[in-house]
Length: 409
Ligand SMILES: [Ca+2]
Image 1 (tube, rainbow, N blue to C red):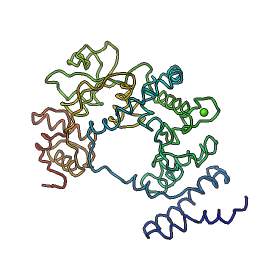
Image 2 (image 1 turned 90 degrees about the vertical axis):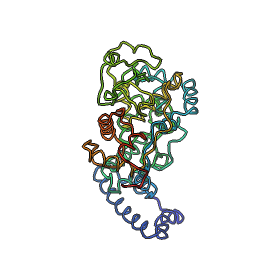
Image 3 (image 1 turned 180 degrees about the horizontal axis):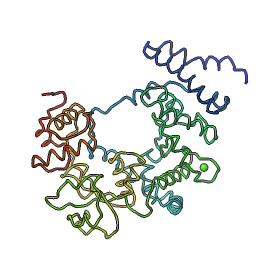
Image 4 (image 1 turned 60 degrees about the vertical axis):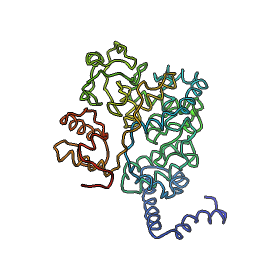
């Protein structure tokens, strides 16, 4: 141990000093964190992490109240498909993706050959996760993970991720100060959690280190390797926009109702230009994320692979649509309706309660518009002779007597 210079000691004491100046609730949080950090260090030590490592890593972790605020924050309103996709598949992101395709073409072709993931998909993930490295977060990952590990809500998960982060630091690929990311601990160009880093990150530029912050080849090779391990099928699309026949029965829609392409053909589904679907031995599910007035999509197995990266249907759709646009495709044939209502949590709760009262099982009312709620909406719509697309549009709200937020009658 080297002797600390006096000012270093003062700096080291600064957090405690600042904590004394904070309001009592924050002081209690800090105190709990300090105690928890001690326990984490003891646990890490039992798991075999060296004292030297812990001293320069875990011992320096700081409580980040902002992380807890962000973790607690629940969206007040539901997001419409148009709102979600318009914010992610933007003209600027498409343009930059095409520029990145030109700039990194040899690398992307090498990765496509090695891992079987087409270049435009790697670019779409990169664009969505960090805006092509332009914004991968500046939160010290140890602080974020230690703060969440010491919070009861998801302590086990984040304690495990924190220890994985220590393994990465132990390996020496990156220094603690450079290990920055999102408030939830997702790191670098591709926003890998530490466990994904340890399992799937690879050295794409051959310098012997895996650096998801400073090396684009490492980040893209890691994304390709991860997608391959999630089951990515080489040369297959994510899905495509399709055209539905008049009077189509929307009960066929939903990820849980896949059918062979030939069967979709028999149901009158055509490609977005009205042509016959490709003759391939593929199974696909039909999605209508904005209801019957919006576009329809047939999605293939690779769509489900994207959902293993991030469990949101709209996220997977944004990856697919951005990838298509980067590869040169035009936008949607049928635009996303911009006038669908965003529902307040109160309204979703009322809607779920009403559906339940009427015998349509939307699960336990939680204010979140998930697949079970959409399924219940669709069954209610069918029972009333409405178009059963599962979309909570104005007609549905009226039929269920769901008023503006805050109205309970
Ligand atoms: Ca490297």
